Image 1 (cartoon, one colour):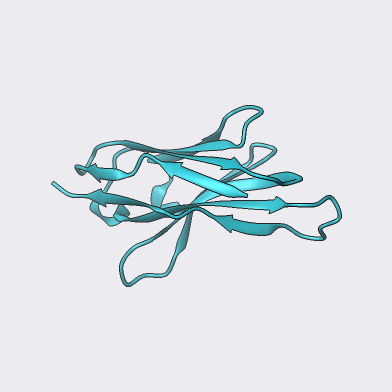
Image 2 (image 1 turned 30 degrees about the horizontal axis):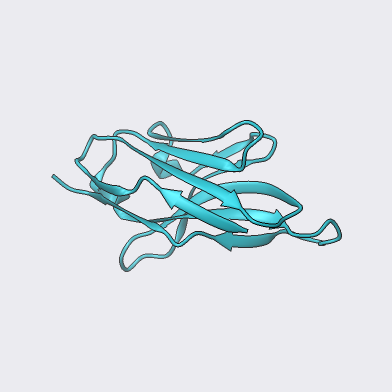
Length: 121
């Protein structure tokens, strides 16, 4: 599974950004996709995740500001980031939990290369 990310960049506090991630390659099924972030000196953390059934999970720190969506019949997800704060500055990485073969007993985790989001005035 290859993950192609887009949409990062520099944004002012209070602004908005939309990150997108498209999955491609050979796989049996993608069960969930999501975004993680890692700020300098901090551990990587889950930002948002969406399952193939449409169930979403959001980190407490972004609830009410960020949302995640998945295009219907597509392996493309979007992270809409509103009212961005300086503490949202991080490298954001797309993640997919997928089975590459029907007989796989569990999902494998795949990662994009990451996109930088910098919040600064």
